[in-house]
Amino acid sequence: MISLSKIRRAGFDITVEDGDLIISPFSKLQPNQLEFLKQHKAEIIQELKKPDLSGTDKAAILRWLHYIGENNQKIIDEVMGQCRSDPKALAYFFGRSREIPEAKPAKPIQCQDCMHFRSFNGNGGAGACSAGVQPKGITHWFNNQHSCGQFQTQEAK
Image: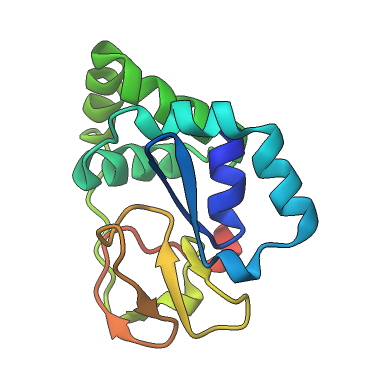
């Protein structure tokens, strides 16, 4: 799970087709990243073939992990992996997520101010939400104003 998360955090979309990794944008891969993909190909393919959590489940579990102060990405990845493969773990963590109060921002927020926003180029512009708020393939602009139940300020890092 760590290898897959690492390449996604670097801003790449990765899928598997007929046993081959499909990376986008391929043109942005650095030689060391390409070597990393070669070395971890089997692990990445195995992770990509696992069923993914629904956006609702993923967002709820991430919200609970952040609520308890868990910000270690390795532990977060392990919990999410366990939830994908073990229905009892998914039920446990999803149940815990119901224990915390629903966070509603008092005013519209901007993704650039949220710890979950990951800019594709590192300098603002379009990006993705690591809390699973938006469906796969959907992006937000860093300065769009909207309401979000997963918003957490950058200072919370």
